[in-house]
Length: 243
Image 1: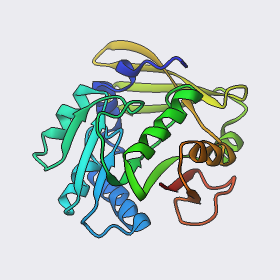
Image 2 (image 1 turned 90 degrees about the vertical axis):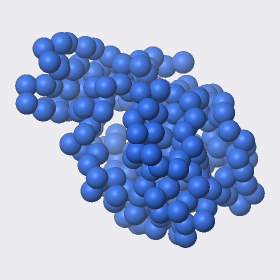
Image 3 (image 1 turned 135 degrees about the vertical axis):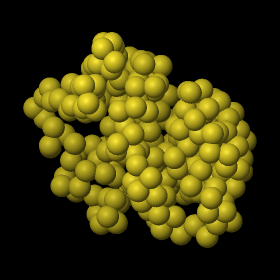
Image 4 (image 1 turned 90 degrees about the horizontal axis):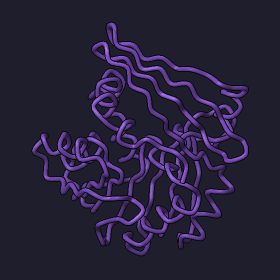
């Protein structure tokens, strides 16, 4: 499996440095997009996996949907539960989902797919298919591989987030032999230096189509976030697969 420091990547530093980006306004807009893309009417049973700290799950539940959130990070689940929403939060691994469904919709939002090696990433898709009802839909939102490669290679490239005197610096490189973005992360917070690494697979559309078919999905549709056809100029990709 590719090296991924899960505990270091998804912890207090993540919540702290992403707070100014994942605002209420941003989160509301994400949920508006999900509802619009899938045409949700409030009666669906939805799986949000991984659900992180509940920014999507809680808002969907507030709109009348029955939501189950699964995540491997206890800290995030504890934060998600603080809202007091009706979401059922379950600790578990998306490679072996600790729920059976059936669900109308499964969500993988904000580049939450591709953390594992190819065999395990395909297993994640099979798990989504297993818990979806016939005709249920999987929605994945992630980086568009082709746009990312066009924009960020040659590498390495860096991105810095600063809050006061605290810094998070990501230095990333795309490995064309594996199709993965390898990121070295350095955080300086309250005078303490921490270093970690995370690795994410960015599959191409043809690869995703093959993987979804192999996982048992009957059809898959690919669009950019604006609803237009994916292109090398559109950074985000939506995958809507039908069970």
